Image (tube, rainbow, N blue to C red; front, top):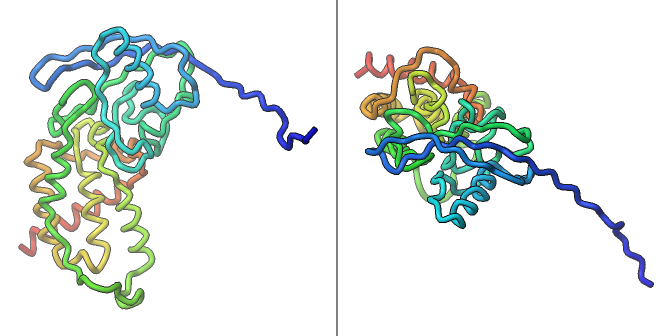
Length: 262
């Protein structure tokens, strides 16, 4: 008899039962309300979005409208997903997107209140889905970056201080999910805009249009209806990529200087 190199493994799975209070709203023009659902036998290895998939499958079988929510990569990269869970954007874990939040972080019998981002700049499309195209318009307002195209330049042809390179990369981690806006009592988008301004202005390639960029992006942010920063720091706490509020200070400094020079 051939010897089995692997012993027999017993795979233990843990399941929990949850009560979900989910915001349901058919469209921007209609009134919404919370509806209660039971999520039974949820595997604790599931992600939060997989849990919603299970609930939606049950609703569909019952002939009911499934819960609409945003998602794409489900790897914490794209910034498409997002909802407020028990008052916390992306849920209770630090530096974690909703799609990477696993159900083992909740206890059986727990009630989860799930609602969309709340901001004038993020109008509700349906249920947990909001229109975040305002972020795209802010980015577009910043314009282009002047760089030479063609073959790759020699690595050391443009000197970049290590500190600036690291700060730029830290700011560039922003995925534009909007959790900062949802967490801020003023629905401010300054952490998002500060990160996008910083990732370019810290590098030599981004300095050519830096003054014009910060003026246009801040102006567009205000036009989109986002509030002002009042140093609550809730944005940094809710950010799944731990973007620092120092980027807001940098943006404010560059904005004031651009105003003086213009």
